[in-house]
Length: 311
Length: 283
Image 1: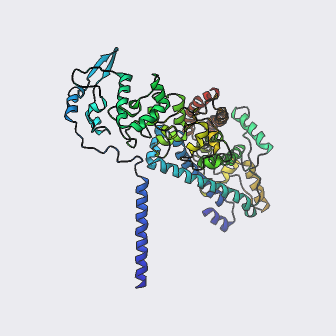
Image 2: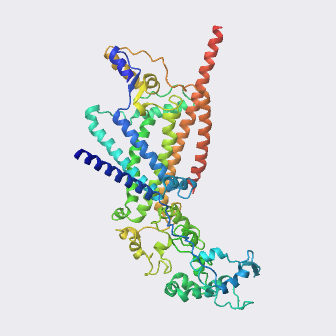
Image 3: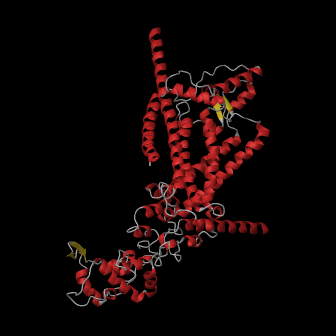
């Protein structure tokens, strides 16, 4: 009897082991992004909004304004799937009432007008935005993003939704619409940017360091990226980040001689080493093959001669 | 095995002698596996925005898996390096001290003679001992490369610890060191090492030294003539005469199609690499 018991125990251990292995493998191959994204909500348009869609639901519906074609079409399906799918059109487009519309504005003016509607619900965010570098530029009438420029218009999705403009993987492209060039190139080159691109959900994108709505210029002592605050910001992930985390150019690529000379020098040294190594290998390998080819031909010629002499 | 048996029975001259002992073969195998995996995973990170990266991440299932494999293999490589050092220090008691790997003045003259031979200025190949000057360069490249890539890699693995001692720009510089040393290593292996141990018509498709540790006398006589002569002397002292090996080695040693195909492939590869890397010197 005890023997049987031991065998049973072994069996149980094996089964538990296999189960752990299976669960572990399943956990390893779990898709990187959350799957709750894009859950279909059964939202239908209200009667008033359905009226709007009689025209705005027509594909290709547009108008010419300032010699530019303005698209007036709204994709109903994508709107209903968005976080605002349960709202009426006029919740955001407050100045629109009746037909023909009066006081219609387009482009940046429309963005600004709708941003006013956003803060009816999102007032706490609006306060942060107004103090941020974006909000202050907007208040001065300079080029600056309003809510819709980052979040999208009729297709606003949650940050956790992979299709969202502000999803971890899409954020650099969204910020890059204005902050193009060196900054984005350097972020994409960095390990952070590479890991995000390849689907590592814990790696930081723009807002993780710069914040989403309270973005301040680095000269501002309240900014998360001000020199004195950088170690604290890094410490969000790097537990023991010390003052040294502030001592280095952020957003630098090695080719940037002016801003990151030490990186440039290290990069140059390795380029020289690589080219020297290629010259060494290329010279030796190619000539070695050429030499051996000639030697085998010479050997073949002599044996042929010997044979003909023998004949 | 069969050769050893034959040797034991008839006390005749072996056709093969051991070039790499068991420990050296284990070290080579561990290094081969770790470096290959490190490169597959590492270059997916260095070239993270390429189709190659997407492909490799898909194979591993996620970036997290890929990165964990990279870290695991890094540990394997460090263990291999420690294994080698322990082998060097303690192995001397069992295998005897060997200074064969240490560069000497002869390596310099060998290199010059090799260059003259390659350029057609001389018909004589340099006569190498146990290790040619190229093999010494390769070994020293690994000997310096593992600390470089290991220390820079550990700095990147534990940036918070590194930052206790160095500013952030040093850690950033370490990333350039790490990924470009890896590129250097890739070229040294895929071009140089693979050429000498696989593509070289004398050993094509592969040298057997890394598999069973053995080298044929014919191969030794051709590529390590001084070591071969030493061996002949040693056997002569024991009263055994070694005839010049007649059997030859390498099925492809005179294969012209192989040489021509390789020549075309290497000219294209090196042409492309120069096209890519030489302009980087002038940025």
